[in-house]
Length: 165
Image 1 (cartoon, rainbow, N blue to C red):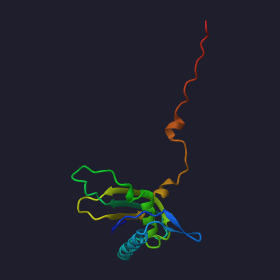
Image 2: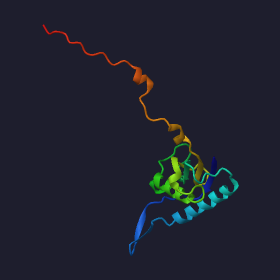
Image 3: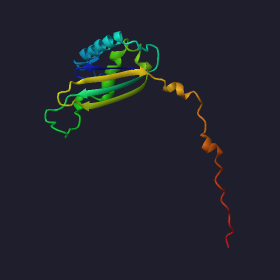
Image 4: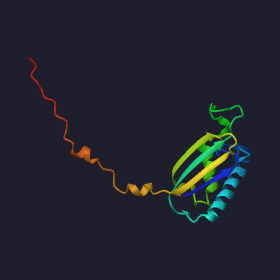
């Protein structure tokens, strides 16, 4: 299992804009630098980590730490602003940033957990990334069968007919 933190502004991937000539580009100017930072930090941790899984199923946990509004004082926390990005698009940017470094292709990710929270006072924004081998698919070797308790249960009693006077 490997865990590391990528500092920076988590940026969503997915929204594109048309630039003419049938070309589409990412709408966010922050996406390319964000993915570059993810790749640099992941490369550093891969270089020092012997637990690499280039061809295996992986489970990935992501915890996005987003900007805390200045007016969020004490324990009263506001809802997370929409400007921080949809969690699925934030996840897409991270998984694509790790491709070719932590795994060959993001299709190897068979289990994914993602959370988004406000930064604590003084905490840096970014994303905590944990990846590990996913063995859950190996535990499901047996075919789907009726549970033993349901198979041995006696059928419900048949309704009895009583003569109507």
